[in-house]
Image (cartoon, rainbow, N blue to C red; front, side, top):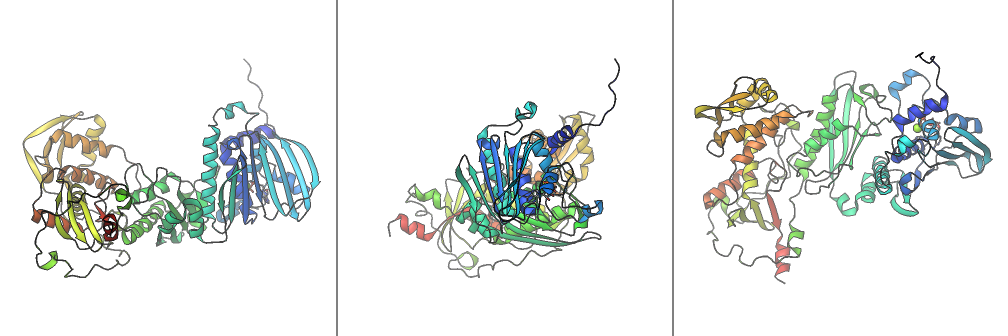
Length: 597
Ligand code: ADP
Ligand code: MG
């Protein structure tokens, strides 16, 4: 069959192809329209949607407006922009848009009505139906621009199929606007969904004000300021990270509120997000996410913003340093500033067992054990000192639990053990319960992370061959050094087996060697983390988990005392390496209240 001749595509087709990249779903339309409003200098952006945006989306701003009819028509042409003059400008572009394809793309797959006035009351209205201009008339409105997008993808059934339920799309748009409110706290945003106001931020304020519009005043007040500075090698120059991060006990089920701005541009970069979430590793439970708003500012030459059609990703010249700085900022904020998780709600509905501590009260001993304290409370820690790098931890600033000081536990007076799982202690403000397993895990983990020599290992009486996958066999060879550092001596034994020669001493006799090795090799397997020592940390966490004293184990008073002392000496005493709390406290006033005093 003869091949059809080569032809240039018509404009609508070109725009629709571009729309395939830029306009994925209703929220992508809202994103582009909001960014245009912000680029036009608007300090109010009001959004309305009907049926999750698929029926209608309208973005109204009070920005500069588009000066005349000709410009208004051009705004909807492919590759038409007022934000870029020459390709060199790409290097330094500071507006959110610059590709000049958003409006053309949107208009090619929906029915658009745009009204724009650069002068109050004098402007134009343009209507485009799926790429075809149907009306251009003079039109009076307040200075600014309003773009209404109706029946998105109605003419492109293939795309419409991929839309989700209206409620899901509406939720995405809600999140998007919340993120922009955080990213641009000086501007006011609102969202009406099916004619009901669902979001409003007042603008004009700092990030704190915007945060309370998004997460509520209480959660906003608990946020911790974060910052970090780095000097990147030329030509990148100085890099600065600033913002707020949530304390470890305030986590949520979604990662939507990890907001990242690079030179003022909100981006959704999986690797950067990962770097941030990694900094929370061991501090919050698996599957839970922090609330984070961080801006990264660096000279434009250090970052390429033109790598993604929707401009959601950027590329850094020195990506590792950027990850490192982000992690350092988050980590420092968490280590220096997080408070102990209060146990308040826990006891609000339940009565405290009246027998706590009434039996085994040890007599007061002298010295460090006595209460009131014979030693001062530790001070609020100084900022994390850089350069405290230890062997086995390449970058102290990004290694869990290794960097400088942290908020210490208060000195605790030991009371006794509860349910063979918890240590009870008296602290400056009431009762403290320490999870013995979690505490021991934390102590071991930090000891191992800061170790200066490999973990002690214990040889098996007879080497044990166990089956593994070929990929794991290869890993055993490739990671021999890392494994040896953990006290694990493994040897390749053909393509599908390894020989266990020795195990970490702390695990010897704890469990079946084959099980230990299999679970560690599974952990080794998948890894894309930006930080190299994350694998080691992960393996160590697994080792600690297995080796820690279990709940159900009776501890003697001296054993408990030692555990408390060891925990107090930890950098991050308040959570286990898997993110659960090691300590909860019930305030004296809460106890008094429960007794009706
Ligand atoms: P880009 O934002 O990449 O320039 P768009 O297609 O989004 O491309 O917009 C094209 C042009 O239309 C912009 O460069 C801008 O000059 C103008 N424009 C779009 N939206 C607005 C608005 N809300 N206010 C003022 N001008 C606008
Ligand atoms: Mg744009």
